[in-house]
Image 1 (tube, rainbow, N blue to C red):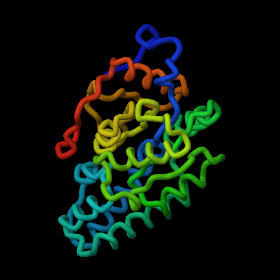
Image 2: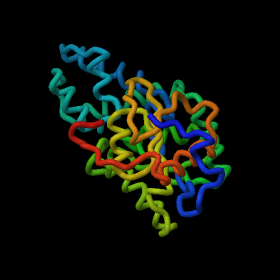
Image 3: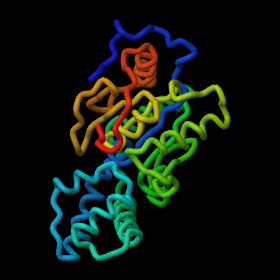
Length: 253
């Protein structure tokens, strides 16, 4: 694990590596919806006479919904992939309508980044119907755009979701590169996706622990974090403190 310190990070970030954008995961990072997903999975599997426990549920955290649906089929759910996704998504949306479980410090950091002119985008494996509900519950339009699981060919841990976000950012800023971006993630597939895209990756483990690894920075929480803290991670990575390495997407991290 690498934790940038005042001694290791330059006081000012060189313009070539200045933080321009932060790419946010949603489930487990912006909002604590993982318990909602897990409850829906358990109800669905039980209704089909199968067994589903917390350990099995944790293996799906951060995965693309199509992949998760296939795993649930293997656990005995006699429905099509689309039917499973719709059931799970609608169950989570219903609970989000009752209460949006924001993660500590997430909205505060989002507002701070926005105030500093740092562009923000949401990169989630949830589909747009759920992601839109969460974004609509924010008190301002912080996210420039959303990249959702139903709009990519390859979900996390593949880098496509993050590479797609970078490409959209470049439409209005051709000089922007992955080196100007940071990703906030909580899961193994999400971190693998972000690291493989080339962005500085900050992991905030929640439902599932993450191993220490020099390819990304681990924070215990977003509470108390500032735009300067995110910029320091981007600068440290650009300086070579966090060395980019190839991620084996098949094996994860």
